[in-house]
Image 1 (tube, rainbow, N blue to C red):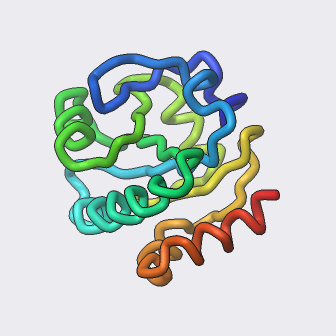
Image 2 (cartoon, rainbow, N blue to C red; image 1 turned 30 degrees about the horizontal axis):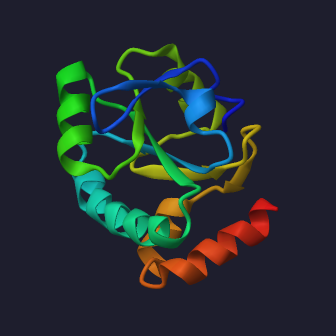
Length: 149
């Protein structure tokens, strides 16, 4: 993922901009496709935050990148800063958003993919896996890593 987002400016929870390649180096990355106007997204985001927080306790190499389908910068920022975890977001209007939607064939949101540094998909439907198996975050993490290697 660090290769795929190298040079892309990502927004962090402190409203600072960081380079995607640098920030994601050595990380296991989940691309989270979501939007503030989407009720299923609003229902899933708190579950993802809880899962993320549990995994981060023992696995600081886990990172989520919010890929927003919001229609305005203010909506993206509000949803990201007020409702999401300590992860990063691709900034509003960045062409990389459309590129990722096409590359990963995202037709509906919320959607989440676990990706290798080169962009290969490890887990195509991480959202469903978190919803169904997320009550045991460590076991699900180990399952993902078995595919990651």
